[in-house]
Image (cartoon, rainbow, N blue to C red; front, side):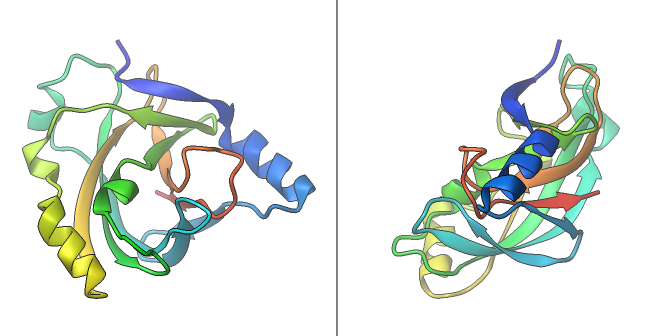
Length: 165
């Protein structure tokens, strides 16, 4: 049983559509690259993905799924956000699977990939400091994760970015 929920448009089709429409396309970044990510028209963050790594076997064994779980570790810094909130970043982090589909994943809290306390993270973001966080993602229907996408839940919105494994 898959623990991921597919988003209707594939990343490949999306990139082609955005390229033709002049809206811009998602960047394909490498681990360690920093990019400005727009989550809404007004809110953007500077995000550096520091790792996309398979979850330890002991973590994966706790879930009944054929999909491999990955931990996405990153730092985020508010860059043009009136009221920063780390939840905006963590809840808009999606897996990109091998066929190019972008999928959202639902998890209970995974201790090994814990997010910082949101109140403390918000204080740091408001002070202009970067915040380190971790988000679990997974493939879908046995498809492997090949990267992650951060940005608006609207796949047609500009300013989203991707990082490749």
